[in-house]
Picture (cartoon, rainbow over the protein chains, first blue to last red):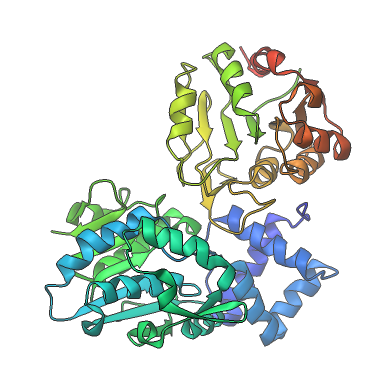
Length: 273
Length: 189
């Protein structure tokens, strides 16, 4: 697709609409990516003009839902970056296993692939029964999908390979049942998950956790918003808890860095100060 | 003389050889940044910057998110992320859907680069086996930027530059051997 011409002013106008009418604040999002998402949707839905597009978003609640679903990036995988999940399995989770109760927050969980991956790790480490996974996203539609625990069967080969690279030794296919073109993951894995909407831009801390995962979310935020969200994570993390980010994300620029010690080689930081 | 505030090079299968040939002959006093987007296997990360930095005295690094693009530096798109350029010349990384089965996609960098540098952008499309880059080059043209492609017959895998030649009117068509000299001419003394 060649990009349609949407001006930067039009984008800013749209962001103002969303904030004033729906209370959704996208003004702290990195513009290049956001503009690509908006342009993509605009082209996809073949709307005749930008003013119609803007009008539809403002006046059609269903379309607004679609808009939010489409402009946020929801691409994810099970056991993506196997090395990271290996570190969780071998270093982080065993240490958390010494606690009587483990609370994990997956912020920006999208369609839930990461939540099910963590759940599998907890189960294999015999920690699932004393754990709770809070999986949140600003987008209600992806949370509905996440709670179903069904992913395309055609992805299972890749996910199984990821799982093995992440130190998994079971037969991955024992965790799901094939239903037509979908793999339905065991209810047991789902039993310790709580799904809820949470907007990192506008919502506050809602609990204290020993592990917070927020991977490939901060890359879509500008520095100020990244800064703010990292403070929110710091407020939500217990002493000696862990914060895990995506492979290209960091806390180095922020004020919280002083209190954290990074696990060598991983984008995992432990709160030590 | 061609105006150049930034050079973006895109390539796929068969493009690494061209880069290895071209980089050693590029002047170390370059008046613009070079951004390189090459398709490759996921997970083979730091290898490419390392490999390329062995061939030039220019600074070569993997592009980091929020990093400001500065002249005289070569930025490599990390594997498995799209590299986007923001209006303030900083880099954004993006993990959205693959484009043309590719992430990083050449189109994404060409398109966002075009909007930022407009007629100050020069894009070079090398050897490759899919049509990534072609839509991006259309955007580059529309914003007044310059389009260069590798001569399809000179490319190990002609498909990508051939597609570009078919759908966009390139400003220059060059053989691999002549690219370094061309890049040096773009640089302001």
